[in-house]
Length: 446
Image (tube, rainbow, N blue to C red; front, side):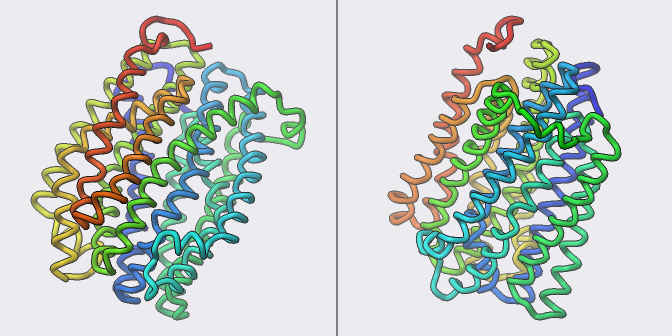
């Protein structure tokens, strides 16, 4: 456990953030390795099949992940306020609500999977492969959600090491099973999906057992599932749905763009898949500090330490901006190598389009850095509407660009999409953060 309400803020932020960063790097490294294994062993069509569904899986699984992160914000407040009884109730409610949502979302996604893939304009030559892959991923969605509940609750009490350890276990198992199912059993993209779900199931059980044995304050019993207070459930649902929909609105926009990208041919799909994988790695630090700020602000709100919240936001923005400079430098010196490392191809059209995307978009990374930190900080202090408005702007902007610019400018329209949207969606966040009473004086939001 780690109390984020005391001590040097810089040290606290990095001590909390570094394990999350390593964990996310492991997750993305696996994703990159998985992409490389699929591309190298099964060919570009298989890689395009996986890439064509990536935005859809990010949309649905991202919603559940946002939901669990929202639950953890409430748990962090109880931890900061030293309310152990309510914390246990919150943990129990997280599993109860999370399972209900995951079952509903799994059922919906499997029933309407084929229409969703058609809506994405998935190319005919990869439709069957895409369906086979994403069906298994969605069928195992509950396992992903359960692990995320454990990980987010542990982060809520300041433990970022344990989720890292079990994530590392999951990644190792995932990679081993990838080779086994794809190379030994010749299961194709189905093997990659089964490997992912199996690793998630194992990591959940291992993390849950450890969590219950290690932390008495998280050790829930049947009694903790009885008589959830309306106030707690209301706070959890508002926080969880806010963060879930925030993630979904962002990913809805990405789905809209992916629909247009899927009309541009297999080479462009592969190029964009590679560029997005690298972009996700670059933007990792944004989400890491965003996650950190949600917990940091939640704990400090519970402890009523408002000045620490303001100072934490400023420092987090500064550190992510330093990272942005490094991302720009790396892109302009090594983009083709990075793209080859992800795809395993030297095809000129793939390398050139992916490089163009990276070289343009990285120049504007300073904006999404602020967006990610401020949105999550707002969630931590109980401001839920403005982050949703900002995410809604991103959705609308990407839909408009997908419908207008991409048909005319083709992949150039895709490259322009995110920077244009970033400039617009940051406006309501800046206005709200400057006028929020809790950040002007030592008062608590009612």
